[in-house]
Image (tube, rainbow, N blue to C red):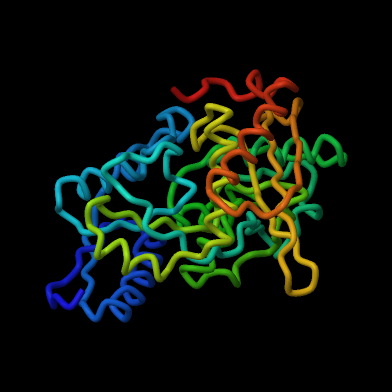
Length: 320
């Protein structure tokens, strides 16, 4: 890739998207020796004011970027992996899944409160049915009195609800706050034993045209095999549940190490009603998958067990 022409990186316009795309652009420029320019693209999810569950969620932050790739308007694109639909178009290649950031959800609360220290009747904002389901389920089983409130907007808007006293706390992805340099505002990290993250949360996806072999080879430098195997299992679970990325589904694949040697992978999945009254939560542990097909099989197997326990009835509209 000795061409000096700038590579065009498609990105959403949000502060978080620009921050994570800027970091990727800098790294790609170092590897390829070519300048990388950001091409800002507005997606339907950015302009719609409806709740994600109402507009379907699946692909709303991705479709416009993919269309720009297919039209040749950009050379590659950076997505938050949790926003990607589980089906991969043949014309596009998932060229790299870089090392994952912290997958946990985080609380930003008034008065620096921890989640379990929030007062009775505390109002917690989130745009995610998955978070609502698990927070409400935890509250039910631990005697907490909370109200989950659906919200939309960027980090400034969401944190502003707390600063202005409209809400007692909001829940955000820790990775996003880390990438925009605002991790210090977190008052509590939610253990994955309390709230399982969205499939792929904390990971990025770098996508380009499937016929651009040189660029695919260059971007492969940024691929982290363990992260890709883990998120492949998580997304396979989501796909087998026939659930979109706005469904109340949490999943996390952990790599279990004995000292420095990674021995096994544990995949956990959860589905629940948003009021937290009904939950299906299961896990499975096995050897670390050596192929992506094995990782996908692990996800499908756990999904089948969850469906057998009634998971389908907890998700509302299933993805088509």
